[in-house]
Amino acid sequence: MNVIERVVEPGFCSGCGLCAGLCPSESLVMGFDSRKDLVPTLIGQCSRCGLCLEVCPFSGEGSGIDDIGNERFGDVPGISLDRVSGFYLSIWEGHSSRGDFRKRGASGGMASWFLTRILEEGLADAVLSAGPDGSRPGIWTFIKAERAEDVISQAGSVYHPVPIDRALKKILLEKEYKRYAVVALPCLAYGLRKAMKRLPRLKEKIVMLVSLTCGLMPNHRYSEYVSLESGVLPENMSHINFRYPPGEADSSNYRHVAFSRDGKQGLPVPAKGLPDLLWRHEAFIQGGCLICDDVFGETADAVFMDAWLPEYKKDIRGNSLVICRSPLAEKILRDGAAESECKVREIDHERLMQSQYETLLVKRHLLAGRLARKEEEGKSFPERRVAMDREILDKYGKYFRFCEKLKAAIEKTRLETFEDLEVFHHLIDPLLEEEMEMRLNGESPFGGNE
Ligand SMILES: Cc1cc2nc3c(=O)[nH]c(=O)nc-3n(C[C@H](O)[C@H](O)[C@H](O)COP(=O)(O)OP(=O)(O)OC[C@H]3O[C@@H](n4cnc5c(N)ncnc54)[C@H](O)[C@@H]3O)c2cc1C
Ligand code: SF4
Ligand code: SF4
Ligand code: SF4
Image (cartoon, rainbow, N blue to C red; front, top):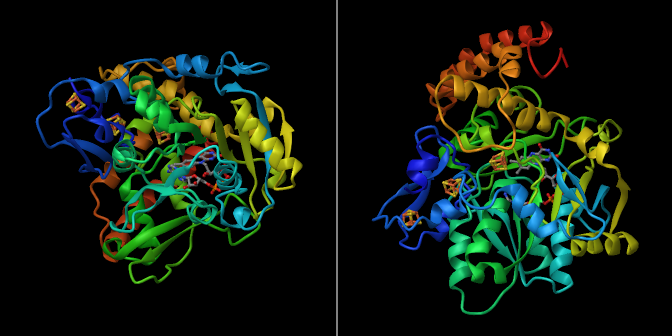
């Protein structure tokens, strides 16, 4: 068995790239499948060594998320544990008040500021974070940052799979000894922890794991769609700023802007409206995300997210929430606050959960219904920490059927030219009316007419 048979073929891959980065026979390469999900494919002889399965977050092999959380944080003095958010030493809300971090960051700039402090305090020699792959337009990758200005240039959120395979190969082969802080989405953070248990050299090199709260990852087709909406042909797109500031006093209505290869900026596309609706209804979402139950990067030392709270709605400068799990992460935050590099205050757990209401709905509550649907269809899936629930499937039956209809319709359309985009809108419009009706009738989990 390898990940192709166990994870990719049944549609459970998140595109993290760990398997391709660590396969000893270099038999796996990352590429897009027919849906434009990022997945590994087998290009060489597989020796059936099983390493890819040991590290993959969706193989069901090795220690689970709860076990790893417990091993890493269970003995931290003063730590608390919640069944859904994992371990937490302290939770904070606020923003960075140093330089341009807040302005350049996706929300309050706290993640980039935190990563910069790690470098400045000599706790790591370099940071691995996400940025556009200069040599492959329209693709994002992990980039090594050794200076504050490199970290800040990679601020922002990448709503496109970012595989770690190439970066991992490089850091494992490098001759000089370097320690890394890595910023990884929850699935990758968990897979990296499994890999660090298996490969001592990796454990020596990764000294801090930082995560982002994650509410599903769109696939490459979402980028093509956004690029067209932004007025840039996908074949000419170099990258997208997925968190261009909002044009109105609503922090959640950030915009996506595509850039062409000759450096021209496209039109801002408000996230609220069609992009958000497609995301919520599982269109363009990587397969693995639809069975993912880790909202808060439970195996990471610190986790950063948007402060989706009513008080911050009108503050378009951006605000973040931070969970500290390791004492070192908490110290960095407290020192930064004492030195006025960030303006933060400690909050309680309930406020954390309130801020992620919708992500929890999608990745925990509705997951129980999605799993029941899989079981009904006789499809197997790796063990999840959320139990399947037929009542949720029945309650939102119309919503689940709608998601499937939307996905099937979208998968049949091309998104390469502006004419394709017109056809796409023509196809989607009647479905939008159906979705609105569902909300008005209380048949959608996303409530009434917002
Ligand atoms: C797919 C996705 C879904 C998300 N869903 C939610 C959600 O449901 N709720 C919520 O509150 N927040 C969510 N976030 C997190 C949010 O978008 C911000 O990243 C977070 O608020 C941190 O903002 P900041 O200003 O502190 O970080 P910044 O200062 O902007 O720094 C962010 C750091 O993360 C790195 N990074 C960005 N994208 C990726 C990526 N895909 N993989 C690895 N590293 C990356 C950047 O390179 C940078 O180093 C999501 C992020 C992603 C990528
Ligand atoms: S089983 Fe081993 S050789 Fe085969 S793909 Fe996985 S890691 Fe590579
Ligand atoms: S989830 Fe990651 S490790 Fe698993 S198959 Fe996909 S790319 Fe490989
Ligand atoms: S939803 Fe889960 S599987 Fe998908 S990118 Fe986020 S953490 Fe990974």
